[in-house]
Image (cartoon, rainbow, N blue to C red):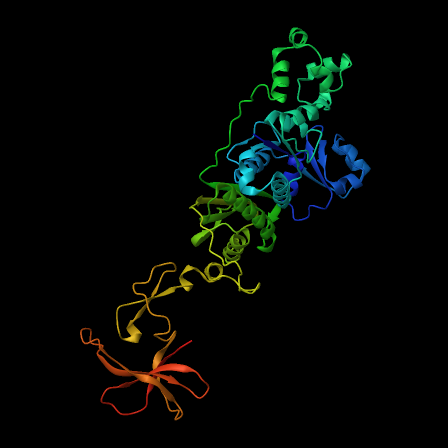
Length: 472
């Protein structure tokens, strides 16, 4: 087995940064009691001002100004860790959050599907960067070794037991996850690296140190296994973003909305499903939530498509009061079947598939504004079709080109003398049972400009042809 550890060294800070539209501005993450606020983490822009972690807030303000402060939010951090587990589930069925700020993934069984480790590693890094999370990734033969090697390495891959043991032997004692008392005791004995500890007799270590120390060392070397609880994806998705200030415009809600939709898409990809209905809740202070419902006719998980649909619904929503929080909930998560695409797609880059255009029109114009046409079993053209809900199956299948694609609301007389009749007449006699009796001869005609239409003449009534529709 091969275990990958994804370590998130600045998860609390990244959790705050990924909710901001201006992550490059100086930002300070605060913690500690109200009487003594302490800087827990800073971004690069704040570091350039001379700030550092561990300072008190008063000392930081005396040193520089022009930076923003945010509180560490444990609930939001937990939400991001849950999202990461759902995202990682796409690449491995064995995902564990055993260690804080880290994910363990068994990837040995996934390499045949996703390619060799360098390819999979590059893919993981790309998607983690898109999620706004800094990371370190290490591959080893057992989960404990992978986690501890990530304390000192990034990009290290040891594929067998011997290489794993050699990499661990060079690790500093204080980076191996040992209890603090044991690490200090080894340091007082002059032991700085694991190789020096492993050179000692096991029985001597057992007499001097607690059994937990020997157990941890054996797990590091893969001699004993670590009991892990594996992640199981939930049957619904819910994510909430607390906004930095009261928002009263749709435009200011687009960035947090995009972040929530991207998180939803990552969750769907990990669970290998799509979404057919979700709700965007605008949470106000003293006012009931405003809700924008997004419904699709088919399951989807493309973040670009989902964002455009949510944006269309949101822009049509009236905001009655300032928005303090944004929440996205999805309960309808059916299986997702990717659309078939040809090897060489002839569509232009700017064009859209009909399914995506249909959903955007429904989001902009409303569900009732976009309908389907289905054929009915009636020979009369004006009675041979029916407007139906999108996605419904037609009652009849009509041969392509046998009937015009555009029927006029009312037939119009044709006065042009240069019309050319194409083929023989088609006689339609029908409708005697409902009072709409017709007896007509239909002709396919062609105009001087090359347009083809469908025209008729009532039987026994001389006069001009009546145009009823045009062929595409």
